[in-house]
Length: 440
Image (cartoon, rainbow, N blue to C red):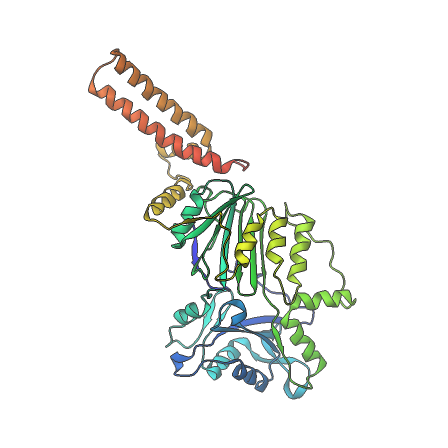
């Protein structure tokens, strides 16, 4: 099971295009997350007024969003327009947008002027080398109490949920509803499951329903190892355009596009300025209703309070998951849940189950046999049952007096233990792989 720190904006970059295409206005967008705490520079907190004064003084075309909206009050988002050649958009003297400094020169200069450090998604941390930039960013980007994550998987076995609690090192409230297990963290979780769990630490389909302040996140994975439908949708409030009085119309329009690209493009299509979208090429397994629901919510500019409930319902995830995610600190949870503590014993369970999910390697005859049993759980069950039958037969012959000797007792015990060692993991693998294509 993979675990990461709970810091908004983290990603591995695998979903990003290697060469982003320019937007409909001919510009790209660049989001810079600025840290408000400047005590490392013996300076006061970075307030919005100072940031906006700097943005206007440099003539930047930009939009911004205070981190309080995303449950990260020590961060402020600044989104800039960048030309395809990598130059930051400026609008000097009230004119239209034009390319300015190169990004790699502009960002350090901006941070030096503001006396702070920054995070640029998906993984760049920028600041002077004499500062502990990683630690500053990590602390600032950890969400506060107005955030929550709910993990869901189809089934009725809570072993996976207890393994979640142990790996995340936090109590979880577990519910069984409509054939799903729903496991909710407390408010302000400091860690997240960075990837769906292994097959033996959680059944599939697997869903994540989360909220950080006003932002919402929904993820759905139908089957493990990139097989089947995989969906990830995140809604965040539109940013606030930074526009000087009397700004050029092109500058105003570019700032509005930066604030909410999808909403701007939706308006442009409805007015006929942009061509209507062609029929979407849906991923295998995704319905048109699911796609339309997500697209409609992604274009919503201000309020997505119904996004989680409607999207989860489209994918068959129980409604209680969205209700738990939407709950604010202090709100009572439904009383039917069971609190699961991250006990030490669950580390053994989680590690053991994760080990069972790892395909054996090696070329020795014994490892070849173990790999075959791992790939075909039914064979493991048959072998385990066979070994137990042999143990019972030997025990019966000993009791009846037809066999004698301590070595027969030892042999019976060996067959019994071997049978259990093959049967129990095989049953776990068989249960969690039902409805999935066998590996191999």
